[in-house]
Length: 152
Image (cartoon, rainbow, N blue to C red; front, side, top):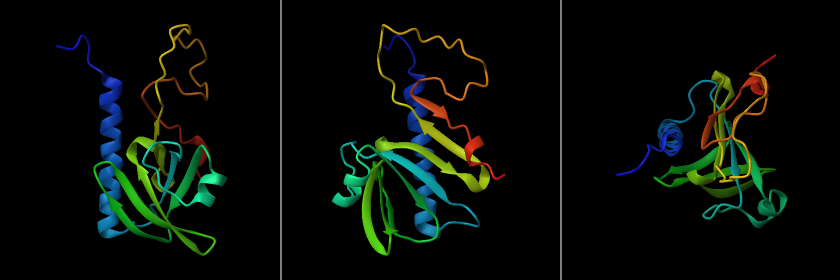
């Protein structure tokens, strides 16, 4: 039996399941109303497939917008594939859920942020900063602060 419950990993999987459910609905029915997504992902994660010119331009991280023009959205248990328009060039992409770092729907001020947890026994995990510190605490999964996406 495990010595403790890994809440961080459980939350991580639940949030990825939420994204999977939302994207499956969009694949089947399209985007409802003003909904649209900003999805940031790590381009170095195994399984990410994208055009070589995009990988050269975004060697570490890329944010895509799923809004007006997208095609071939297919969602699997492991991730999704989508064709997006980059300067009138349709480009297919494959993005594993493990590569997703943020998922934001600014139309309803909803967002998720996935943090990678790196073991570092030399650092103190305690946060002594003020409560309104803009840097979120480190962990497996965090809620994304939406202040920067809010309409003024």
